[in-house]
Length: 388
Image (cartoon, rainbow, N blue to C red; front, side, top):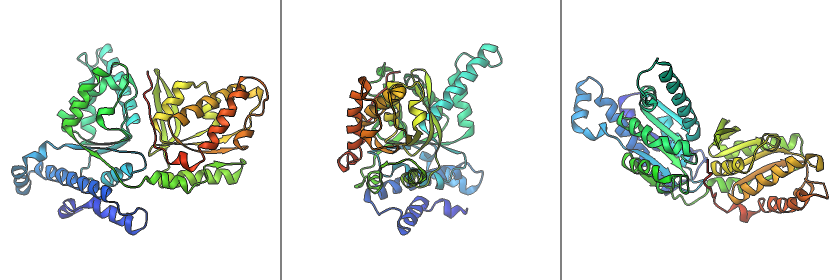
């Protein structure tokens, strides 16, 4: 890529291509954010040139000292506004070579793994010192200069307690952070345990990133959900194909990848996740010993959930039915969009006529029916803190 191309509005050009192809509609709020991404890209290009041992690099270095102290971007707003799409356009066109894009939960899982490894090395005497955080920060800074986070969200106390120290080190080493989130910085970890210890990180974040609220006029995720059939029955190849199509349309053909959620000191596996959307098989959620905190964590982390292969259950499967009841309650309370394939209509999923599950499942059937409605589709995602 030529030097001039580095300084051209690459993100705007990519956004224009999407508009021309009919993939997105021109949106003023999105366009304003695109301009901010291009401005950040220009600052990154300027810093890159300043680091080169050339007369041009020296000139840029003298002219724009601020390029050595670049603020990132923190983009927040309601779901379906295009935050992830626009950040991905920026990441794909960022002129910086050492860059990393990750779901924030995956990044923190990696950080905790590194901290554990370094702590063990310190105990063994193979690494000097008593604090693994500076060592982990140095490792990350050696690997990348630009960190792009999707779905920046803090629900775990272990994450909350480490973030301030970690990012103080990362920012001091010149890391640029770009993030998307459903919440403003001041609302991060709201209601969380020992939140007062987390507040310095919010202050640090405000110093190191520009806060941008994306108030685009359209909930694009909501519009896509409206055009989908969200309750598919009976089970079979047609339902499987429709679920695959729903995933592709909601994620813009992102294949997704496995991730984990940290809940009460353990990991809850998410087989497939992308862009705030998760996909599970019924067995992943209800044939395993998961509980209310696990389902609340899923409802907090994802604004849309796809569940394949919900079977007809009887008294012999009452434990699975109980978990399914709890799961639907959590998704409903979090106003999570739901796409499901099932063996029967909601009132035919649980066929036992005695026991508390039979009584409680009437509420579940009612909620499943409501979650198919246009009124429910119009609701915004409502996350909540899971005490851990």
